[in-house]
Length: 200
Image (cartoon, rainbow, N blue to C red):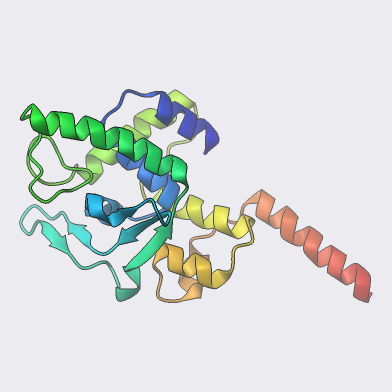
């Protein structure tokens, strides 16, 4: 992910860049990031509040409930993300003043063509382009959820914390997102061997 992040940050400042950066750090669903209001960003406490989801069906577009009630949550993020988003807020404010963007809902990621968020297709296309620039295998926006899960597991985060960060109803659902990474396998193998050495 480091190569991807470096390639992403080197790209010009666009709505897609900051949307993808937010997904990268949070592991949130497209619909959750798309529905963020600026007031949902709480840099004083280091969290992004997920309180709603964007319903992007062309016939029934709007802001609604998260996928499940447990989807309403506070997602911990590093201060560096807030610094990047403050930079983007300044860009967005300038575009609003120039009349290039209308943002009546105070959305973080409002589309320049209308007052709704950018599309999932646009986000995935941007991710694909960034993967090519970074020379890494292609991923989708949903792949960031899996990557965040892997990172929390490799960091040995508490399962309840992992569940709460991903907005899952139960812990087993969170572990379904985990990859059988080689690093995770090696780490756990060593733990088991160390334990067995003490009892055998």
